[in-house]
Image (cartoon, rainbow, N blue to C red):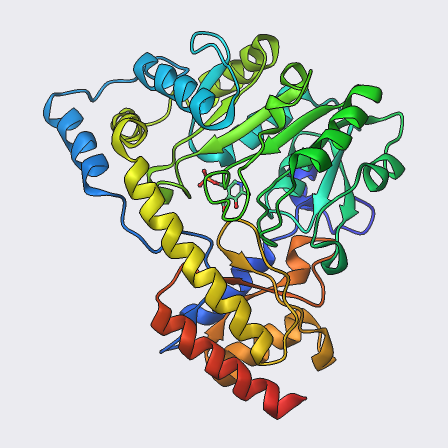
Length: 391
Ligand code: PLP
């Protein structure tokens, strides 16, 4: 708090939080015409029709009341069998599953459920921009562990161990990763599991991009030996089923942790929107073909952008999942902020400067390829033109 100018009307915790670095770019871009945006982290598909129809039907049938705090039991049962089928994890729908308002809420209540003032949470970065503020808002202290291009943005147990202190309470992992698209295989995850056991850490595993793993099957952290008891598994419908606006996610955790999160959820949110829960139920029951169709389309676009970035001279690791490429712009000599600003103002392409995602992000830009091939082709052309001007 020392170098923060304080306002006595506001909480110290809120004042400690920096405004999102992504927002500044969206605000700039929103005032300009003919922008191609590779900035937003959401699918370019509309939610499949059968999902929308199921939600509409729930309204027609008059299901407009609060649901159970933890979510409608049919949805929790379906989440349970879906997670077992797809990721080999077993959770009891009655006591270990909570339907949340997006994965975002799950991260928030997870942090608030476990942290005491001053507890440290190791965050593997570059990372989703919410983790640091949500740790801080829960009274915790975020400890950054950076990854890098040379290691394909994977993290090792050794790197994590170096950051552990006697205040470390939890570790935050996200694979496939936003913003790097990095994935970790079973062996790599196993090393981290051993470390979690050795140091008695809780592990947040944000697996919201699990279904968008292109080259290898996703390994759920909770499926590793002895890990279920110490894992808070976060997921949701936003990315895999193209449902960002529905605000529906879920969290899976051992009963004691889940009961604590349920307390927070019940007093602040009551329940996730009922009509959205009926849509999500349908997505799990009949949406797997649509999911596969969208996944194949992202994969094709991933292959195109990574190849094209390399052709125009930007080094770019092959992201194994999610829908982001994270090329290096280091050779331009500009910071990621300067490069992104130039690209926006001179070539009208919006990307997100890598530094906003924390350690390891500087020198890179995040490009979401969840947009049309036409937009991607034009963006590559425009980037090439800018690179020719400045290198
Ligand atoms: N976790 C990660 C890694 C994300 O990238 C995002 C959204 O961008 C979220 C969580 C939030 O997802 P939701 O829409 O379910 O709140």
